[in-house]
Length: 318
Image (cartoon, rainbow, N blue to C red):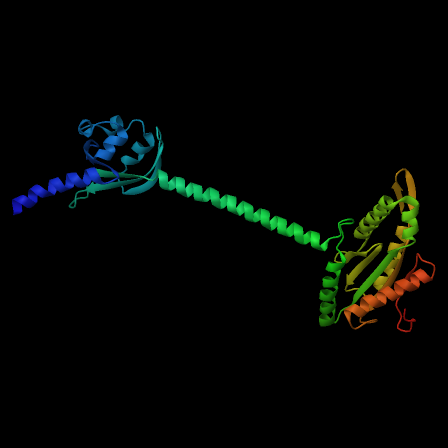
């Protein structure tokens, strides 16, 4: 029975060596090949009987990357790319065989597993992930653009009435919570219909765009400017009391009055009227604050236009 077992072990070893999918090469202490399996034979293109007793430099001379790692003295595992047709990516493991008593090196076992297909799949997955993230970024960018378009006036680029309504509620609540001031300047281009009828709608659009830029360039940082509708604009001024808002509105009115617009070889001038209302002086609710700025604007128009009116509590209701 013992003899049968002893005979079975080499046979089993040969079967295992030649049927596992990995390349296996065994070298002695002199770095000569003493054993190899059929996978090594297939990869190297040399019959394994011709490998025995050979220096790996002769057998694997086409794979310098492979050779550099075969001759290490410590156990190692890493990925190596093997040139040729086909190019292979392998996971290489080198296992030193050492004497149990004194630790001297008796040889090495080199095992290499072809992971080309797995790496290709990983690369494909990586590429697909990059494409997917690219698409996600495109969608996010498009979403941001759509969101921006939803709150921007397409003609002037200012925030629109929808955005102003949300901003007014937010800033009003903040001012009430922090016991600070909030002012609204509502302004309207004077005689704009007549201007359009005289010079055309394209010229009218140009004036609205010019006014939008003028306001953007001349308000405080933190103020919110919106096109309220038609030729009406509104400026929301956090932390600004009535006096500060009135001074700003007057300054804007005087500067805009002096501004010359060049359009189609014509030099044009335009003015606006404005109404000012503030929290907490004039209103305790956001809608009422806007309404009272509108009432003040009405009085500016009724007063001859190109004028700034501050709402007063005893002003007639309109």
